[in-house]
Structure formats: structure tokens, C-alpha cells
Image 1: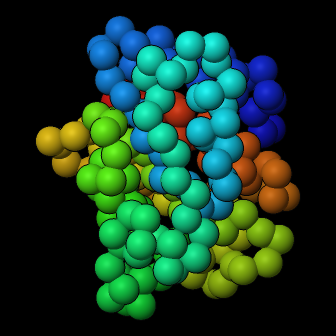
Image 2 (image 1 turned 90 degrees about the vertical axis):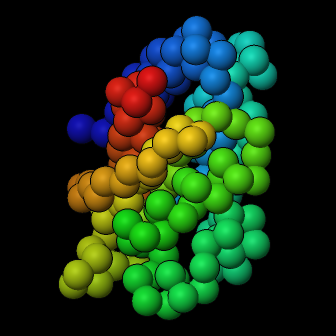
Length: 163
């Protein structure tokens, strides 16, 4: 069952409270979620204290220009890969004033999937400034909305555990 709006809001509130308590600022780098993580975070009143910015980079060109993803990474591994998620989350920190970053890249569907990367395949990366990036692959079920909702929830849960 994909998370509800209320469940996403509760996750965002929790992450925001942790960011504020630790005096951290968040940047998001989003592809398949189209800014939904940033929206969830900035729906919370007072989020300007702990939310720096969000970047939505759908195309290869945008991933390169906004986030510093290398062309050879995209050519070799594709946009939906561990390598791209790591470069996206690292680039988000380089190109922002934030101290904590999350990046998502995936195939929300209904088309675009392949045998090795079916619809619902999502890579999420997390990184703290000065630390090492970590990325995890997820295989979500459901339609486009369900995949995107589950991605937002997993991204926020990962931030929660990192903080």
C-alpha cells in the first residue's frame, strides 16, 4: 500500500525536526519524483530554517549541468543506476549551501522499463557534507503515482535514519 499524504507529511515533519535540531540544511536532487520530496518538506511551516533548495533534473543534460553527473556515467550505467544516484547526491551538495542531501532517480512508469531495470526500479542516494554517499536500489510496485509516493517515503525514511 503506497503511503498516504498524511503519512508523507508525518515523515517530512519528523525529518524537519531532526534537521532543525542538528542545525542541518537539506538539498534534494530529484528525477522520477519531479520535486515531490521538496514539496513534502516545504509544505511544513518553518521549513526555511532547514530546507536549502531542490533541483529537479530529468534529462541527461540537466543532470550534467545542475548536478555535475559525468556524461560517461550516464552513457555507461544509465540515469537509473547507483553511480548516477551517487553523483547526483554529491553534486547537490557541491551546488548548494546544504549539509545533507538526498537524490532519487528511477523509472516510475508506465513505460520506460526494461528487463534489467523494470518499472518501479528506483535508486536513492543520501549524503552528509564531508561524508560518504550511500545509495540503495528499490523495486516498487504499482502505478506511476504509487511508485513515486513510495520513493518519497523511502527517501525521507533514509534521511530519518541518517540523521
